[in-house]
Amino acid sequence: MGSTLVARRAGRYVARRMTAIPAAILYVSPTQINFQVPGGVGIGSIAQVIVIRDGLPGESFELEVKPDAFGLFSYFRAAGTPGQSRDPVIVHVDNQLVTPDNPAKPNQVLVAYGTGVSSLNNPPADAQASPADPPSTCSITPLVTVRTDQASAPVNVLYRGLTANFLSLIQLNLELTNRPAGANPMLFVKFGEADESAGVPLYFVEE
Image (cartoon, rainbow, N blue to C red):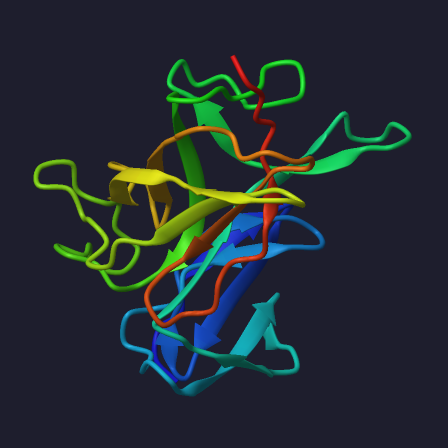
């Protein structure tokens, strides 16, 4: 089935193949493997994914390959404590996370990080970090909105593309407008004909 990329952890080898194409591995833990879908896998196809451990293949599973299926990365704020919240990775321009104690305000610029976009200008090769000059930009400008339980407001997209020198990391530079009236603001992102991403909480207050 061809060569396979491998990652080593605690003396064991873990690898993934997608329809006989090796997949670059970004992260390995006892319960999770993050890997990059190879560019050679056809859009709209159903790929068979196989995990190989200690040289032995596990059961395969199917993965539908879409052109764009954007999702924001998230993390557990105050992990391990009662009422922990899973929040999106959205930061201020000083790289500080947007949180209830450090919320966004109207007319600010934020940076959101995610993955799942293949419609790119100047795309890097598989397993290669994204270029800086010129950058690898998304060929589609996403529709980004902030919605509350009462209203919505558009968000200006200043940059959409891969983060330079990283692997498959989509960066959206977002300029907020006015905060819509109502409670529980949520951020939504939609790339072209792709499904809209699930809304994520955005801690957004008036000046």
